[in-house]
Every structure is written in C-alpha cells, then in structure tokens.
Amino acid sequence: MNIKIVNKDLQATEAIKDYISKKSERLVKYFGEEFDVTATIKTEGGLQVAEMEVKTPTDRFRAVTAHRDLYASIDKDIDILEGQVRKMKTKKDQQNMTESIRNKEMAREVEGNEVEGEIIKTLYYDIKPMLPEDAKLKLEEKVQDRFLTFINVETGKVNVIYRLKDNKNYGLVEPEA
Image (cartoon, rainbow, N blue to C red; front, side):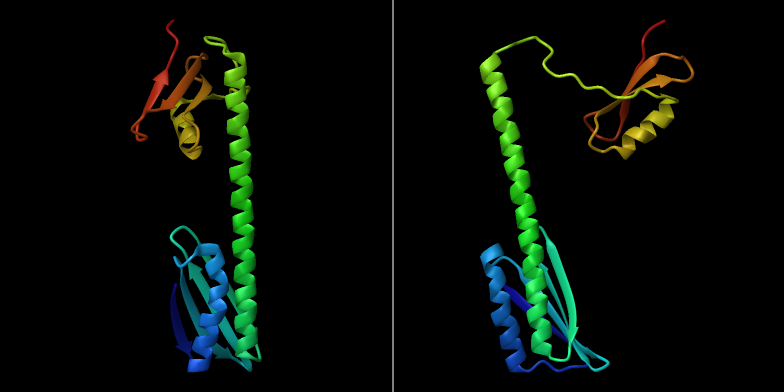
C-alpha cells in the first residue's frame, strides 16, 4: 500500500498523515497490499475537504467530502470507498456465480444428452433491409457480435456480413443467382 498526500491550502501534519494511513488500512482486507491511496486535503470556505482516490491494478475508486473537521471528512471518505469496493466485489461475485452456474448447466447438458450433429440451440432476430456498407457500420457498433444477417437492398436477397479473425476486415456472404 502506497500513500500519497497532496496539500492544497492546508498543511498535512504528522497526525493527519498517521490518521490517513491508519484509516486506509481498512481497505487492506479487500485488496491485500496491492493498491495506492492518494489523499488531497484542502480548505474551501469554512470547510475542510478530503479527496481520496484508491487505485488498484484493475480498478479505481474516488470519494470527496467536506466537513468542518478534517478527520470527519477523512472518515466519511473511507466509509464511501469501502462501500464502493464492497458493491464492486459483490457485483463481481454474483457475475462469477452466474457464469459458473451457466457453465455447470451447459456441462450437464453436454454430458446428459451426448448428442452429436444435432441443432441444440436456436436464436431468433430481426433481419432488416440495408446496404452492405450500412451493415458493416452496424456490426462495428456491436463489438461482441461476429456476424450480422441482413437483406441487401440492392439485390433483395439475404446476406451475411462477418468479422474476420484479424478483427480489422470483414467478409460478405451472398447467395448466387
């Protein structure tokens, strides 16, 4: 854990530095020792403002509070940061749980059925008339999709545009005659 304190209009005493360090240790249980804390302290009007930012290799969290007492402002920032971290961790845990349940269900389906060469999943979607260039633009918007089926306005036939493995170029499937 690295702590950096930035002073603006307010000098950080050793007591304040120790307090920020002690309070930041509450975040160790979430990240281990792999995070950086940047605390900016300043005065605005009659209030003491503490702005704290926590950076990890994968995430960034930020809290800003103002109070007459700088220590209260620091406490509130740590509470806000801890809440943000807990919310993110809970969200990731739920996503991981959902993904593992899906993987288990798919494994059961594959093990239980032992079907080969059969259509086991069907997707339905709208086919809209458009030009191939418009279809390419639409496919560029949807980064997660590998292909797009559409009705070619020029020929009136169903075409498929797909993203090539290099993720830079596209292929077009057109029926003959």
